[in-house]
Length: 220
Length: 197
Image 1: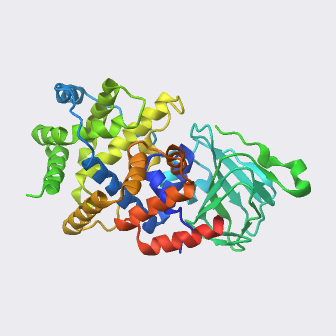
Image 2 (image 1 turned 90 degrees about the horizontal axis):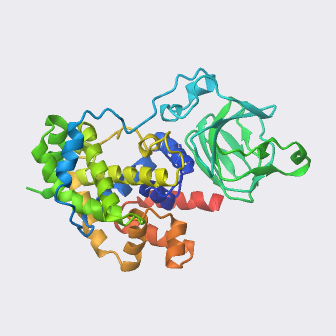
Image 3 (image 1 turned 180 degrees about the vertical axis):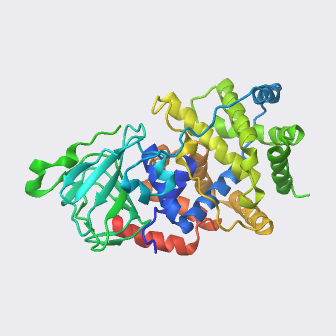
């Protein structure tokens, strides 16, 4: 049962296209698991259709239809969607939604260890402001305590983790605001895989900050 | 015959039979609306807005085989294509990610599990349409800035010189009036929010 959802106005920003790439991907990922948000988004799209119907009409040039037919007549092979699913050989890739597989690099994911039980693999989507990545926390593993300099969105893809505030299961969409400190711990029976979107570097608190691998914030 | 059913039927004909007459009927009805919609995104002259309108129709033609009136109405479907066209245009303008991802790659490609019956769809549509016309100006203003101009909640707040919280509550009130957010969901989300606010 998914307990944590994007709030309604976030879904509205998603639907209207006000959101940057990486957060949009995180919401679409949540929708792969969540029927309730999916129907909210469908309703918001219906509202978009209705707004379009009620827009004040502005006449278009007389020859526009002809131009459209001319373009259609040409053999137009270019597709709108560029991406197809990658044949990634990484084992983690098998446990994430097909939707996300499109964004993975070909071949191996480039995993970096953040601690003995946590590793991270960046996903490059050509974003300037946000860093998108997969995280894998080993069974029972702890993520070093850290606080956020920017906002972080996490979507649980497999397994579950908990922190001071609760337990998060597959499909949960969790937002951490800048300045919040937390220490996620994976459940005891399986590894936890998450998608994360980070909007600024975050730092470890305490002594560990001297060895802070989280600081390698590098939007791709 | 109900107009909305008519548009759905036209779009299905375009998809199934490549019917140019049906396409022209859709074009004539929706183009002036699309132009209005795309104009308000800002910073575009009339000529480039028409290019976006044109691009939208080329996609409509190409994708029409994927349209099914069981999954939604023609206007909603055309809206999402126009939205994606606008997103891609803005993104290529600011040279962010010029050649890798399209809006279509990042938005959902899920299948709707339990499509609504045509009757339920029509009733919903008419309800939304009537409620939308009745919204107080302060709420429809916020929706217009979001839908037509693609502004985020924060950008709407900046534009109207209002606190973000006020903008959010206007969005929620409007959506609740149109029954677009199920009360259960809203309650659930609000609890969720207190957790991470």
